[in-house]
Length: 189
Image (cartoon, rainbow, N blue to C red; front, side):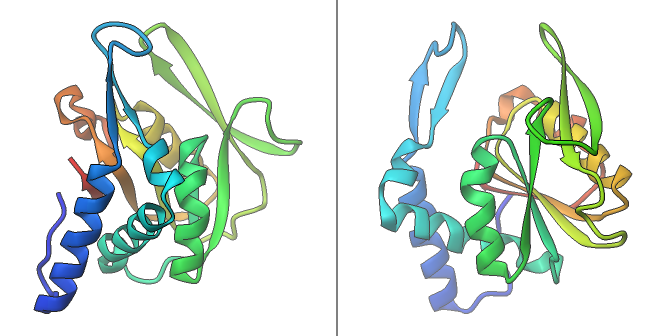
C-alpha cells in the first residue's frame, strides 16, 4: 500500500499526480494469454516519456523510507525496464535477475514453482558485494513466487535485501502471502 505520510502538501500532490498518470497508462487486456487472466499492459507507460518519468519518480518516492540502496535488482524482463532508471534516480547500481541460461557462468540459481511446473532464476555470482543493500524490483506482484525466488537468490549472494517494490499488484491472486517478511511497496493496486 502506498502512503503520502511524511510528505508536505506539494509533494503529496506531485506524487498523486504521478501515480494517477501512471495508472491511466496501464491497459487491462482480458483473457490474455488465456481466460481468465487479465494481462496488465504497461507499454503505454513506456511509450510516453512523461509516463515513464512519472513512474520512476513515484517508485523512488515510495522506496525512500527503505533508506540507502546500493543496488536495484530487477526481475526479468519488465523489471529491467523500470529497474535501471530507478537505480539511476536512487544513485544506485543495477543488477539483472535473469531466467535460467541467459547469463554466462558463474551464476547462482534459485528455482520456484509455477502452476504448470518449475522455473529458475539466475544472477551472476560475485556481482553483489556481501552486505550490499539491495532492493528487489518487479513490474507485477501476482502470486509472489518469482519475487520470493528473487529474494532467495539475492540472499544466497549475501545481499542485505532491504525490501521489494512493484509497479502494480493483482491483489486477488494473494501474492503478498507468499512473500518473505520484508518491507513491500506497490505503486498501483
